[in-house]
Image 1 (cartoon, helix red, strand yellow):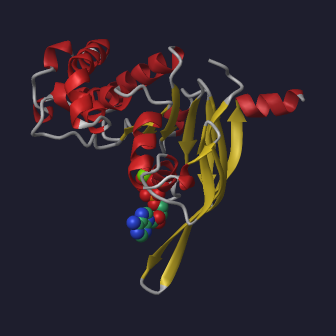
Image 2: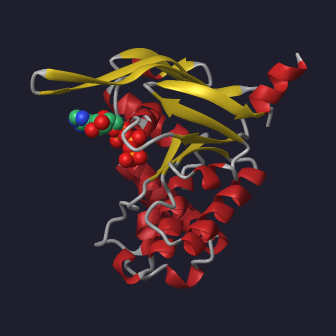
Amino acid sequence: MSRDRTILQSEGIHKSYRMGATEVKVLKGVDLAVKDGEFVAIVGASGSGKSTLLHILGALDKPDRGVVKYEGQDLSRRRGRELNRFRNKMVGFVFQFYHLLDELSVLENVFLPAMVSSSVIGWFGQRMHARKRAEELLAQLGLAERSNHKPYQLSGGERQRVAIARALMNKPTVLLADEPTGNLDSQTGNGILRVLEGLNKAGQTILMVTHDERIAERAERTVTLADGRIEYHKGQDQTRKALT
Ligand SMILES: Nc1ncnc2c1ncn2[C@@H]1O[C@H](COP(=O)(O)OP(=O)(O)OP(=O)(O)O)[C@@H](O)[C@H]1O
Ligand SMILES: [Mg+2]
């Protein structure tokens, strides 16, 4: 792991939504760089475009203009299945409302990304391995006893830990989390933050959206999204700038 290697970069991201006759400019040129092993928080008022930005960074949505690069590779050059494969490998996504599939068991939810990213024959060959990894992740997140439960049988904090395990399944380059604690009481939310901190200490790069400044303080670097742009950088970058 090299701390100075930029692994996720956005340049000049623009995004507007058309609502009838009016055009709402949400992002007006977002530049952001995340380095290998960093834990970055994006804060900003409700409606400032945090989710929009995260979805674009995670290739779940497309910008009107601008580029997103993972390890120097431009996302916009990829389409369809190739884009899906790329996303599957590079990005793990954690949502505020978990987005787990209630028909599947906890274990199946976790290994789903591995299943989706392999061919039918490929899956046949690697399903034991995938199952084992899913079990290990669940154990790591304190959910070994919950493998055969259905998501609706779990508490909010447990569901979010399942969602984190699912996001980690394919060993993503970056973990993107959109208000991962937003739906939880503060104590449970703190537990989730501790999980994210632990993952980051073990080397996982994390980009997290929150509108809670106190939660953002736990990250090593905070950026603010306001008026469609990244407004100021606090922490590491600022220190570096001050030193040079
Ligand atoms: N699909 C869409 N169609 C039209 N407008 C949208 C769409 N998605 C988002 N917007 C608008 O874009 C703006 C930014 O939304 P976004 O969800 O990114 O904000 P946010 O910072 O994540 O807010 P919150 O903190 O409440 O989650 C809002 O004004 C929203 O109404
Ligand atoms: Mg949002």
